[in-house]
Image (cartoon, rainbow, N blue to C red; front, top):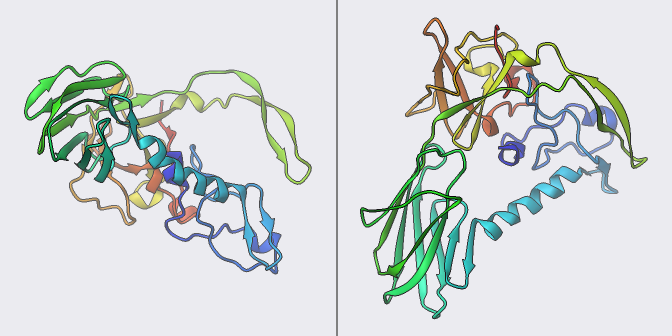
Length: 304
């Protein structure tokens, strides 16, 4: 959620750059340094901001973001001595070699994480025995997996299927995508180490006392995706919402076609106590204009 949310898809420019570096060449950076969780706007400064000799500028978050992109294929699909591991579920093709040096192509079809339905088709020249391990996310309380319509046990951190695989074998995976209500953990007060003195390379400790309104906030997580409100969805993120938060889960309706005035992975609606719709999108897509118009919140203020 945080990583996808940091990608500067709208080519927004941090508003303070011009005042900090009046002579800088003002261009958008590929990654956003700061994305709020409580009601706020993105782009509140750039960590490690540096002006280059050619008047362009850069920040450490942009560097680390580029490194993060390179990590995805490193752990998304892994090869082991007796088979393969699926950690991420990304549509497309992966070509690999078995322990007997047989070429195998895995074709994944899915709109995950909009839905929890994933289909993986195998293509190989000759039958061969090996194990396919499929990550079973902890948030999916009811996972299912089948090979050629035959069900396999789907429990534990990884669903392991060891068999003789053949050309055109199909794995169907289904994860439970219910929306969980997350409540803040009370902490009272604490010492924070988040006041960085840039350029001097040290951090100043500060005393923090829990906001009295903290207990009135909730977050909503559908499957692996944190949901967020955005002012552009028709309701101010500063106004409390009136919803039933007594249970662990809340009913969520995923819109077949998003109505949000910005690109998003998914748009959902929940009902308040008066049966009115409240619209949210995935956290990664919200707030991308970096201004009050697109003010966003992942921790949602409630009225009780």
